[in-house]
Image (cartoon, rainbow, N blue to C red; front, side):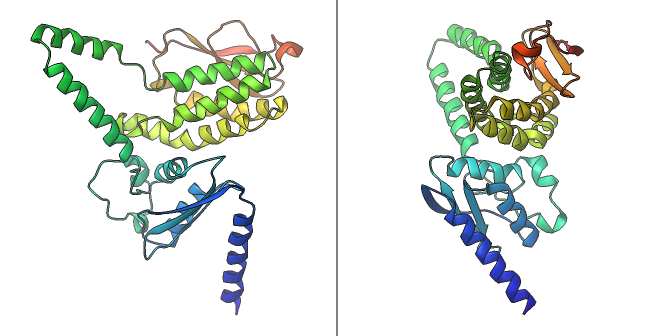
Length: 292
């Protein structure tokens, strides 16, 4: 009887969750896993209150994804699940995320490239074919240019972070929301599988937190709420700073009134937590020259 009551409670909980999702769209997709721990991890990683609900069957390995099509999409949900360590038909989990799964959860991985990686590989192959058709002297020049001009993978992430910080300094909630949305896109577009092992480990560790903070800031024009969320965003952005090659010196600054930090390109204190009310409140606690 007790187990039946638990089962009924879970059904009612899921049903209630579905009822709160507007503009709902439902899809099914295969996600690899083994056990009840996998089920909990997959559903927890993919589900967000009033936005997305994931239910996974350990026998069929099929997940039913119901989401608000105006707030999210299948790719965003599957990327969160991949970051938790679980392969789907579209995205492979980073190797280090898979390695951190409990032994009972380590399913047999498929030997294939994730869709996002395949797209990039095809693009590189097409570029290589075009280069091969050129005269040899041009080949050498173009290849050298591609090597030296390739942008830092984290440029878009940090550029949008600094744009959010500047908007909060100016107390411009609308711009902060817009730039947070762009930050979320930049993080989602990161090709984790192309990074070095230590970079994968560090970025995977904070990626979900960065995405959640960016989404939270983008979803409101309440400057107080944005500033509060910016604390966690700054902390997690700082965690991946060692893997970013900035073109200038950066400063990690601290506000004693909020007991919170932020990153800045400007040595002069411009406090994003208070704006013009207490613009110069704070101090630089770390100077970072990423080129060295």
